[in-house]
Structures are given as C-alpha cells and as structure tokens.
Image (tube, rainbow, N blue to C red):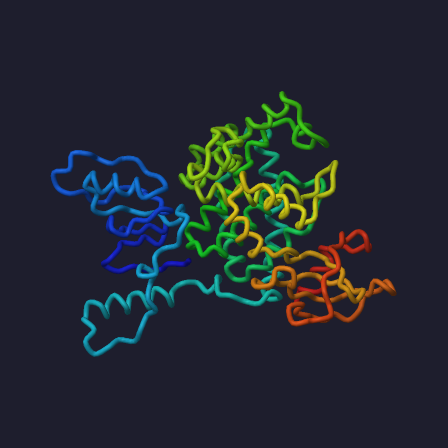
Length: 433
C-alpha cells in the first residue's frame, strides 16, 4: 500500500513507512520499531524492537506504561490502517487556513517539480529503454563480479545507480524489465542472478504496495544478497548435483562473506543487511546461518527467500537447464513450512503462472509470448501470437487476452530453442517501436 502523507493522528515518514500510533491501535502482525512515548514515572524502558505476535505482548506493553509506538509497516505483516492513509488532495475550501494553503502550494510545486521518469507508460514505450539498461547492467555487473573475485571492494555507486534505474523502469511499466529476466544465459548465472533478483524483488515489492524508498533499498539488498559467492570456489557454485557436507559448509559461508563485503559499505542500511544475512532462513528453522523461525524472519527476508529460490530454479547454469516457472512455483507452494505461504500466493498472483516473457503453445497450434498477466486469472494472461507450429513459420502478430477467450487455452510452455527461436531477438522484433 503506497503512503505519501500522514496527518496529526500519526507521524508518517514516507521514506521508511513508519507510523506513530497509540497503544490502543496496536495489533498482532505489526512490527514495533521503537517506543515513542511512555507514561510519566514509568520505570521500565522498552528498548527491544520486533514483531507483535499476540495480544499478550500488547498487554505487557500496556502494563509497562507504553502510550505510543513507532510502527514500521515495511516489516509488518498487515497493511497500514486505512485511517492513516493519505487522503486525496482536495481543492481549497473557503475556510482553508492560510498556513495550510501555503503547505498545499509548496506540496503542489514539489509535485510538479518531480521528474516524470516514473510516470506509467506502455510496454512498447518502456521496452527499448529497459532492454538497453538490462544489457548495460549485465556487462557492468559481470565486471564488478570479476573485480570482487580478485579482492576489490563493492562499488556501491554502481550498485545504487543500477538499482535506481531498475526501480524507475519497473515503476513506469512493471513488465518491461520482468520480460527480460526470461532471457537465459548458461555462462552468466552469477551476475544475471544479481540483476534478475533485483528486478523480481522490485516487481514484487511494487505489487505489495511498498513505498518507493523501501523498494529502492530492497532492490539493492536483492542485488547484493549473494555477493559473497565471489569468495566461493566456482566449481562448488556450478556443481551439477547435490553438494557433500564439506561443500555445503563452504557454500553456506557465502552469507558471512556477503556480510563482510557490505557491512561497512557506504549507503548500506539495516534493511539491506537483513536481506543479505537472512534470505536462507526458513520458517521451520531449517535454514541458515542463525536457524531463525517464523516471525523472527523479517518480511523483507521472506520476500528475498522466495525470489532467490524462484530465480535460482528457473535460471540456466553451465551444467543444467533451468526449470519452467510452474515447477518453481509448485516447489514454493509445496514447502509451506519453509516459505511464507501468504507471500507465496501473492508472488504467484504478481508474476502469474506463466510469467511475462514466457513462450507458450496454445490449444490452436500457435505459439505466443506472454506480455501481461491477468491478476484475477493467473492461467489466462494477455499474449501476442506470432508462430504457426503446424506449418512451422512465423505469422502476423496478434494480441489476445486469453481471459476473454473460451476456446483458446494455454496447452504448455515452450523452450525457445525447441523452435529455434532467439528470445532476445524475438522480443526486440515485437516490442521495439
């Protein structure tokens, strides 16, 4: 839920989605960042922060004289209450105070002064920009990855610039960057995993309604979450088959290596570090490195865990083909004890059973590329038909909304190479205007 302002009832910092609210409005599922106010004379000083799991915690806070708390809704499991959402800006009324009007005028000027780069635009209009950035980002991250393996420090300026461009593109059009994550490269998994996770986390965070500043932090956290892989032998990362105990221990050390590379980096935030340190934690306590359980794992880390596994399973690697998205989604669904089942359901609705950029075979013997999902019908996206499989040739492109078709259904997903299709070229042929 996007929040842009808050009034006297709560002090809302849009940059981190914090709200100050009275103890009477505290509910399980809210994440307490700090205590804002206690009754005068209260001896106990509450210093801890964390998730409110039940009413007993609330009762304890009341008993300790807590009056107001600062709630961080970026890490909460429930949305910001409707009463604290910013109302729409209304025209001035006759009884508007001069001071209020000045504030409104300043706000309006600030809004006009904002760059229009995040204004929502069509897929075709954004795709050229996204494709250019995606190619450039991959080259830059490939170089950065190589530099890190030789002992250099993380270039946070580059990481920040790339994440800003990803977030800007996704906010302008959700699908342009997301489509590009479907382009596979067996030799480029290390750096492509960085950029693809950043894109998918941004798309998912936008879908969940998180604020832009939080999304920007999460994009950086996603890009850096596995940076410690640069310190792990490549043979272990690329191994075709299960790791033995010694190899697994070595692999798990990448979390500590990632922390060491980023902990003191300029601009790093607690949210980013939490995603880096905790994305291998699992709800049932089977994860690492701290074997956290349930609500001990932040929402950001649970989001990162889902995206990391999904992207890792669907990616191409030197010694194995990537799984189809449906296989990865079924895996996440089947492991409810490990992955937040509510967030998994949201993730499926966000990216669709057949994500954008996927080639599908239709029941009428045509191939089509998925261009846009239907939120209410994950199995019936909007597609562009381009190929006749019966006669084995390209046809005049035609857009179809499968949710409005009774006869045409998706029969299966298709690997582009099965029909000698270069996905990158196909996307440029159909989406560059």
